[in-house]
Length: 143
Image 1 (cartoon, rainbow, N blue to C red):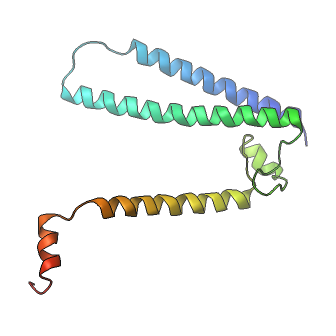
Image 2 (cartoon, rainbow, N blue to C red; image 1 turned 180 degrees about the vertical axis):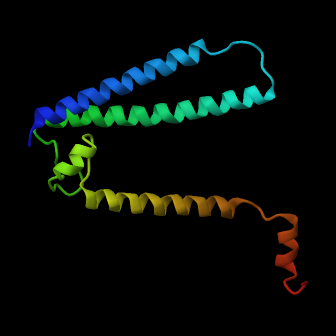
Image 3 (cartoon, rainbow, N blue to C red; image 1 turned 90 degrees about the vertical axis):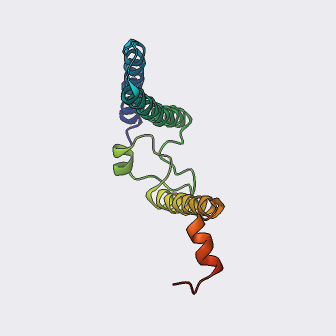
């Protein structure tokens, strides 16, 4: 495995993300500072939320890139963190900062989706029924 090739890809992606974040920050600072209507305010809030989400994803990717660079230095790059298997070169080519082999990645995704579904169900169960639903549950034959 050509570790220098992966190091270079990681460094290029890292630089690309940092430049993108820097440009986004400059754009955010230079945006209009005048008074806008309610639609402008809502649009600005949505833009800020989208920017925050994008920067969070970029920060995560930067963390993973830095981790991958440390792994190259320590000789553990390309080894799955979960099962210890060798991560395929095609996978590393596609996502050089990847931490898991394809099998462990799929298992992690299944667990994440299951947890998300359970959280959504818990939230749904916390929400009190509406007035119409309360009546139906008390008198199910009222149809």
